[in-house]
Length: 219
Image 1 (spheres, rainbow, N blue to C red):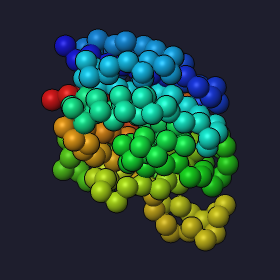
Image 2 (cartoon, rainbow, N blue to C red):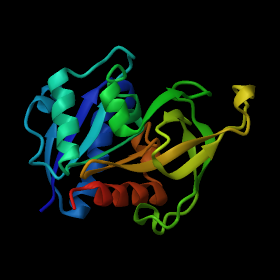
Image 3 (cartoon, one colour):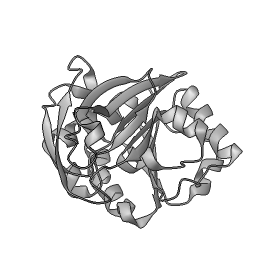
Image 4 (cartoon, rainbow, N blue to C red):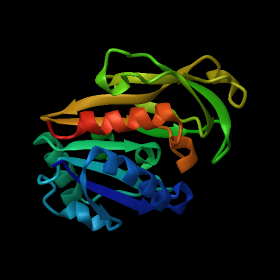
């Protein structure tokens, strides 16, 4: 059975407990055995026993960091084959930890329309050959549209284009919405949708997330 560490908590603006409860349905569908924790010091443990770690931790400050031991445990576990997955707020977690940023493969920079603004935008699947996107259609979102800085070695699965309505100089620019990457023997999956549980309820977002978890777990 796949063993999962679901780490959630932090800034309440991203409703981490409600988002975690939404993910519980996916874990049940997939038959995962889940350990749930809202204690950041969980990362001080040996994490190699888990097949997958899901980061539902959320920060509001760019100064929030991980300790050296937490970074070493997390990166070391993924390097040895533990998968890592997260969405939305995971891209804004542990902002001062460069090792975490490198592991995840990207960093939230801005939502041009503003915090919690329901900006309508389109998400296009740009890699339909990957198992994570199998059967996932292009979809629409009305939520925070994340502008991301990303690792050039990511495999981008989906992207969005900015209209320039709020920041004219980014009109026509694209930003990845979903990607995967390898880290040693481990796999990493992330997508930027999910400011609220309602954002995740789209059948295509749910399928993308579910298949991302399955792909990222220890094989």
